[in-house]
Length: 326
Ligand code: SF4
Image (cartoon, rainbow, N blue to C red; front, side):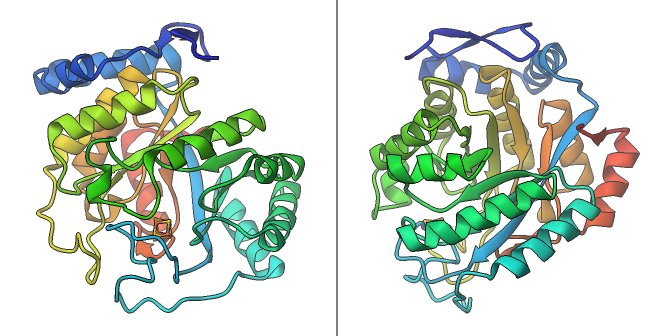
């Protein structure tokens, strides 16, 4: 069912599902302070603005992916020097999850570089989900496209969240990925929803897209029948060997704008400041928190790319007076 409006967790703002691209583009065009203040107000109406949700992401099966996502060092189509690895053992994954919990993570996300999981691999991932949940962590996996029965199997294992990003606007999508369609992605999201699993879905900026594409991406996310519970907004990490290795860097203020617009359009979603923080100044990250970001990936690595060290992140949160979400 598509709801035009939906109550957000604190019930303060009605979440709209009928955002037009023109309306979203108009938000991007606001003067920067006006946009950030509006986003900050929406944030306060729906969340404690001093709380940040902390997730840790582990690559449980690295590299050798048959897809051609132009930003991704794990695609087998690009020579990035990354060594492909088999699916990790259950014991090794649980050891990482325990360490993440000990370091303060609330959610443990596991990523596998597959086009879609084979059923026998899915059984192993389900055992990982059960084991991680038993440690008292929330679970999230990202495994590529899913069929409806596979989504139901993950739900039975107790999975809390499934990540599957829209990546960019429908218009720019063909410049980034050719091996699966936008509709394939929407279908997987529908299967995840139908199985009763929370959705984690966002995108990447800095891939050479224009402002209209950033607006198109947020409009696509905010027009889903239900807003994703988690919305990761990633800054492109330029990896040598991928087609996007030499993209000019995105102005950090444009990244902050994207966070602010996501916050306004999806008021009840947790907006995650995701990849790209390693190269982001503390000031830019502080602006992102002000503009409504309320989640980070925590830990020295994001799948295969670097992320700030844990002590640096804790120092930044401390400096800003932010605390981990309960
Ligand atoms: S983003 Fe995912 S699907 Fe695309 S190439 Fe990388 S691992 Fe494969």
